[in-house]
Image 1 (spheres, rainbow, N blue to C red):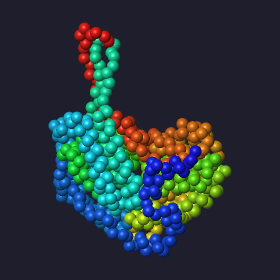
Image 2 (cartoon, rainbow, N blue to C red):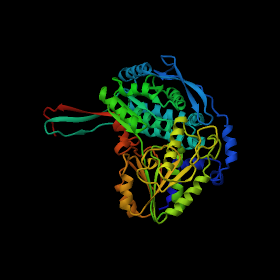
Image 3 (spheres, rainbow, N blue to C red):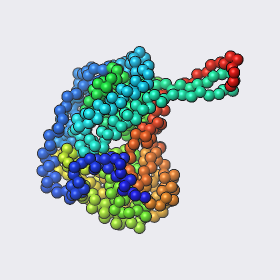
Image 4 (cartoon, rainbow, N blue to C red):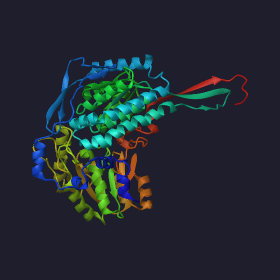
Length: 535
C-alpha cells in the first residue's frame, strides 16, 4: 500500500489539506525550532486579523442579552488575555430558546417546507460559510489556539462540505411500503424528531457545529445549541450566516454558557425531544442520566477515547513515525480519537523511538496565526495544567521521558511536544485520556498480544493500523473494538463516513446516512384495504 500517499492524498485528511494549502514548504514545516526565537515570538503574539462583533445569544432570530444580564470572558490562549465578554446563557435563556424552537417546529415553516426548499437554503448556507471562511477561521484560532492554517484550509472546507452533503439528503429521507399478514396497506414515515438540544465541545467548535446542526436541519428539526464556554465566538457568527441563508427564526438557537447551568438545563428540559452531546465520558454520563430523569429523551453521545495506533513489523519506519506523530499531536493533542497509545513491534521499536524523538523536536510550536506553525497553545489554563499533571504522573510512575515534558515560554498555554517510552498498563498516561501533546509508546511482540492490550480499555472510539500485510490488516481491523479503524491513514473525516464509539466512547453515530436515524422518528401507518385487486 502507498501508506503516506493515503495519509496525505486528495485533501481527505486534515493534515494533508492544511499542508497543501500553506505557502510554507516542508523545510519550513519541519525546521528545527529555536527556543530563543520561540520565547520572543510567544511573548509578542500577532494581532488577530479579525474583529469580534457578535457576543450575544441567538434566540428566535434575534441576538439578545442573557436574561440575567450576565457575561463571561472568553480568553485568548496565546496571551492569556480576555478577547471579549460573551452573554452568559442560563436556565431562563434555555427556556426562551426552547420556546422559540418549539414554536418554530409546531407552527413554523421549517418542518412543513418541501424538502427541496430546505435543501436550497442549506446549500446557500454552505456558500455563505465559504465566503466567510477567513473570518470564521480567525475567530476559531483566536478562541481555541489552533493553527490558523489548520482552521482555514482543513476544517472550514469540512464544514461547508457537511452542509452540502446533508442538503443532498433533505429530499431523500422517506419511508417504505410493505405487505402485511392481513388485508392492509402498510407504509412507514420518517418524521423529524422535534426540538433537538445539542451541546458541542471546545476542541473543534465549527466542525462539531456542522456535525450536529447539518443533519438535524436537513431532517426538519429545530435546534437549541450550547457552545463550549471556552470557544463561543465562531458559532455565533455561523448562526448569523444561517439567518442570512434563510433559515427561519427559532429554527436555530445558540446559547453560550456553562455546562452545569445551560448544558444541564438542555439535558433535563422537559420540552426538548432529543439531545446530542460531544465531550468527556464523565459529562456524557451526566447528560444521559438527566435525559432519563426528565422525559426519557433519546441521546446520542460522542465521548472520550484512548485510541491505539499499532505499528506492525513490516512498516516503513519513516512513514510510520510521521503518521503516528500526526495521529497524536494534531490539534495540540486535543482530539477525542487521538492515537494516544502507540504500540510498536519490538523488531523496529528502537528505530521508531529515535526517529519519533527527532520528529517531535522538529515540530513547530508557536503563535497559531504565523505561517508554518504546527502546534499552538492548549485551549485554556485548566487544560494546560491538566496535561502537565499527566506529564508529572508519567515521570512519577516510571515511564521514560525522552523529549519535552514542560511549558514552552512564559506566556500562553504552550506545551513542548512530549514523548514517553516504555509505557505500561496501569500508568495514568497509558490508561487515561490526556487530551494534550503527550505521546506514549509501548512495545509489543505478537498480534494476539497487541489486540488484547489495545482492547483493554473502557474506550472504543478509534484505532490506527500501519501495515502493508493484508492478512495483518484484516486480522486487526476485525479484532479491534472501536468505531473507526484507520489503515495507513488517520483522521479521515469525510462527510460520508460514520463516526462514533464502542463501549464508553459513546452511543450512536455522527456523519453519513447513519446519523439521520438519530434525528428522525419512524412511524408505521396501517390502513384496511377493501376488495383489493392484489396483496
